[in-house]
Each structure stands twice: as structure tokens, then as C-alpha cells.
Length: 628
Image (tube, rainbow, N blue to C red):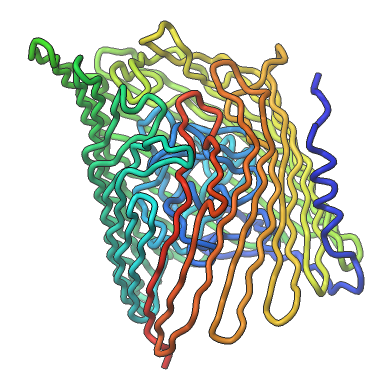
């Protein structure tokens, strides 16, 4: 049984502040049929799935996780530092899928995929999808999806940025037009400090090069995207520092995609992702463990989108393979000088998916449904092969009530197969010694979402009441103080409420607001890990002549009902703001700040998570070629 939702009065008060429904125009239900769309049905009116732009935030974002957590029901998970992951509606780790265009971004880190190697300045938009999305996105999308789209500059632009905390800095240069774009960036930071004075192992240096282009082959439209990223000396910020120092001396990624229209209503894309990650764990005076990991992922996606008997229909197939997924460890004793080496992972994977979904409008009611069949085969040196298959699906109904209201109801089921590292890795990580479990069953997530949208002349709002049932959730558990493994341990439920609103004020100013709360328990009544703490936010943005400003205040409520082994969270007041001026001739100067109240708070409930960095003040100077 669930306890009453304690912060409910706070969220109800927040909803009461949204604009009244008076004289609104029609709320249009828009069906998007484009090559970028994942399904036959896409609602572009939703505030909660509206793309986030790194260039439109109050104070620059340092990473994709920093950007995503500005949305309701998204919270930082894990330990901290640049390779921070996020939790979506209380689910994190490998259950949160990351996509760069059509390319699935996989990581062999047990904490999940961070996509932190992509500099936010290279990102055009980030779209957050909540709940099971396996039909559209496949394996690993049982809890939610982060959909990344590359930024395509038009003209020439550059940017210089500096922040006081950790001496963070950015240098960026880009050029492009409708046919091609080229962008380069370098971002770096030194170790920082928390508001309470703790030292944070958060230094890093990162380089990105991104190239995109459009062309024609035999009268068919095609486009390509390439990204090369290199990171150096990336610190892992956790509470064991400096008694245990974890760093990533080198991180490399090379990924790309080629998409092409094959024929009428047919599109195809091929993609690849090569990555290397070196991990160094030092226990001063005892030993140093160096782990070198690499992998090559590649895939093919073929999709047919058409209209048949008033039905928008979308179907296709995907192949996804992983090769040379390897990890090697070298342990050096600082006492004796002895060196031990071992192969900690040597595996490969193949997967094939068939999917279909459809949408039709019946007057004021729209209906959508979809199915995906997925098969996966995993093999590792010296281990028995594992063969899995699963079927996932969803049903959705939208009901337009008058000209102002839109109700939605969605039932979705998602499945995730265990990753290669969860099954086969055996060695050292930043959290300690880990041993894989080849006998893991697939995870299953069943989600139910009831939504309500309203739109008027002066603004709009959206509220969702949702619940998820989790079965066979794969958790990392302690075998001893120095060893962990993975088990299908959790069966439980998560229920929550989230809301977002946008109010148009006057003279070009807007007020955004929102918040969320949730409760998560297993079948024994014990709290689930990575639950999102209740919070509410207000954000003001606008422009007056050459001046523009933005301010965002978030209040995070305390949360002490946490999973075993986690740490409770105190309340926190988070304020970020920016003020910029157009200097003419395409030049812009911006002053900004993060954690302006210098509040001391933990980033998450993970027992190894650190406190957030202290107040940071910064300056950005940017130039963009003026339109002709």
C-alpha cells in the first residue's frame, strides 16, 4: 500500500497558479509525418516533451544531464562529475535510453549511459520521453528516452565562456549553411568545491568536432552526421575522494549516421559508434587499477511511412550489433610493485527488431497503437551464449473536448535485455569490484499515463497522473564490502504526478512553472532506489530592446524515504540566472550565475554522491554572423 503523497498540497497550489481557461483558441492536435519522426503519431503540443535547447537556458549548462534535469520528473542519478546520469520518473541506469538522431548510444558503464562526451554547444535540442518507449526506441527504453539532435549553425559563429567555479571555460567555433555545417569546441574545468568547502574531483578537458551535410544521390535526398569527441583527465566526483581517487584518463568517441530516402515513403539509415574509455582507480599507498575498455556498435534502420484508408501507418526493421566489446585490467601494487593483468570482458551482441505502429483520427478522438518484436543474442569468451526475445506494445487515446482541452490516456509496456557488462564483466570499477551474472532475465516495465492539456490566449498547462509496474528489475547488490554483482531483485511500483505551465505576460516576457512528486516502493513496501525528490520551479524569461534576461528558481523538498544503502536528501533552494545585451554587429555579452544562493545540497540519494558545486559566476561573449 502506498502512503499519502506528502507534497500534494504544494503541487495543487502550483497548479492553481496556472492561467484560467478564458476565451482560448482551438488546441490543435498535430500529427507529424516526417523522416525524423519515430512513429506515425507525434504530439508536438506537449510542454513536457517539448525540445530543450541548451542556448535558451538561464545560465549555460555544463552537460546533457544538467540540461535534462531542468524538466519535471528528471533528476541527477549516480555519483557526480561530468559522467553524471539521470533518473526519469524514478528509473535510471540502463533503463534510460540515449539516442543521437537514430543512433542508440550504449555504454558499458554499470551506472548507465551519460552521453556526456557530447558538448551541449553541439546540441540543437534534447527531447525527454517519459515512461516505456520500447515500441519506438527498442531495447533499453523501458524507463524513458533522451533524444539528442545535432546543432546545425547557419553562417559563422563563435563563443568564449568562463565560470568562476573550477575555472570552467569554453571555446567554440562553427560555420554552416543549408547544405553543410562544421563545428569545433573545447571545454575544460579544474577541480571545484562544494558550498560547504568539500573538494570535488570534477576536473576534465574535452574536445568535440561535428560535421553534418545534405546532398542528393540519383534524385534522392540524403544526409550525414559525424561527431568525434575526446576527453582527457576526467575526474569522478564521489564521496570516497580523496581516500580513493577515480579518474578517466582518456575517453574517445567516433560516431556517425548516413540517412537516405530510398523510395516514396521509404527511408533508411546506417550508423556506427566506436568508443574507448580508460578508467583509473587509485587507493593511495595500496594499489592502482587501470581498466581499458572499447567497443564498436553499428546498425541499420529501414522504415516505411504511409497513409492507408485514413490510417497513418509506420513499420520497419532494425538491426543493431556490438563487436569487440572488450575490457582489460592492469593492477599495480604500490607496496611491492607487482603487476597483475586480466581480461575482464570480451563479448559481442546481435539484435533484430520488427516494429509497427498506426494512428487514426475519429472525429474528436485519436487512437494510436504499436507493437515491437525484439530478438537479441549475446556471447562472451568462455561463457555460454544467451538468446532472448520479447514483445512490447502500447495503446493511446486522445480526446479533444471543445476548443480548449485535450485528454490523453496511454498504456505502454517496455522490455530491456541485460547488457554485456551486466552479464559478463568481472573486474574493477569506480564503485569497487563487480562480477557479472550471465543468468539475468529481461526487465519489464508497464506504464499507465493519464494526461490533460489546456491552451489559451495567455498560456497553456499540462498535468499527468501516471504509474509504472516494474518486474525483474536488474539491481547492483553487495556480495561483500568489496564485491558487487547484479540480480533480478526488484518488483515494485512507482506512481507520480507532474505538471508544467507557460504563461505569456506582456512586452515579450514569459513565466514557466512546473513540478513533480512520486512514490516508489517494491512489493515489500521498501523504497526503490533513485526516486526523484518532490520539487517545484518558476522560470522567468524575456527581452527588452537589446537586453534579455532569464531566471529560474527551484525548490527541492526533503526526501528521507530512500532505498536501503542510500542517503536521505535535505531540502534545497536552487537559483540560476542570466543577463545579456546585444552589442550590435552580431556580438552578444552575457553575465550568468548558477547556485546563486550558494546552497549546500547533495546531488542525489546515492550513498557515494557528493554535494553540488558552490556558487559559480560567469561571462559569455558570443558572435554570430548577422543575417543578410
